[in-house]
Length: 157
Picture (cartoon, rainbow, N blue to C red):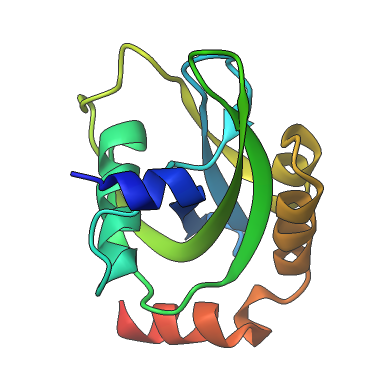
């Protein structure tokens, strides 16, 4: 589903699955990576160049079993080094699209390869390795509805 040019440039798309708990606090759904088991967001290589949020939607479903409404505007970007099978590092730029989760499937494509868990935003920020991603998450900790991407997403759902 991806093309060589996208993979070669390290352009990825991520979903940031969100929900509000019963006390009105924002929560973030994280999954473990297949290789290292560290906590990450569902992400992958861009599949639809004209609608990158569709990639985020597909990755959230395949990696986390999450179904919901994905915003069409990215909430941010971060960088990381993806370690390839041959041991080399590919610098990746990840565009992050917010997603309001409406349902979690009990069975999904990568269920046997990953764990998923809801975190407070600040707890999720402490668990990720990428400083830019931690900053993006911490930026949501205080008044997330002040962010236009979240506000529009909440209105649309």
